[in-house]
Length: 219
Image 1 (cartoon, rainbow, N blue to C red):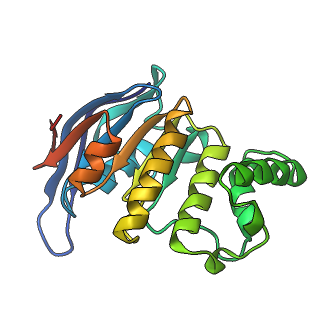
Image 2 (cartoon, rainbow, N blue to C red):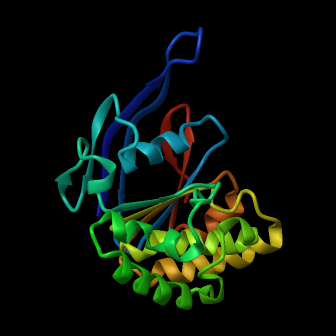
């Protein structure tokens, strides 16, 4: 289980006074549960994801996973996966090596990591593109590769930051259903950030909106 306890964060715009971005954020996300976070740009959604991932430190509060305080634990030791809206695939690596990257970082031999990547790509229908450069893929194919890379490490928590914002409406709907099916088949806690309420309601068992730094339940 992922748990946030009294998370707070202030932000100081250049040349301006500090303002409260997050205040007294409390949230629990169970394994196999997807929670949707709504809010306009600048509301603090992405900052909250970065705090969960360990990419930013909160000013106050704690992040716990399976009952253990991981607030000070570096990102690479949390066992979490984060998918950004711009895919964050490595342009100098082919699709197979992008998917294998996390396993290699965990210490798995490169050949073994590539074998596992091939299996994962086959599950996603992406095996024919294994040796392709990522810039040769369509937007939907890049997102499938990014999700395959995220899931191959069997993360405890999956964090999705506006994963479909750059795609057209039809493709968003197709990938949303595909992602849901693959996510619910894995024992992960999932936090899905979006500004699209229809998308949030379709993916999230529970939904919250960030308003003036506070997390308010929507459903």
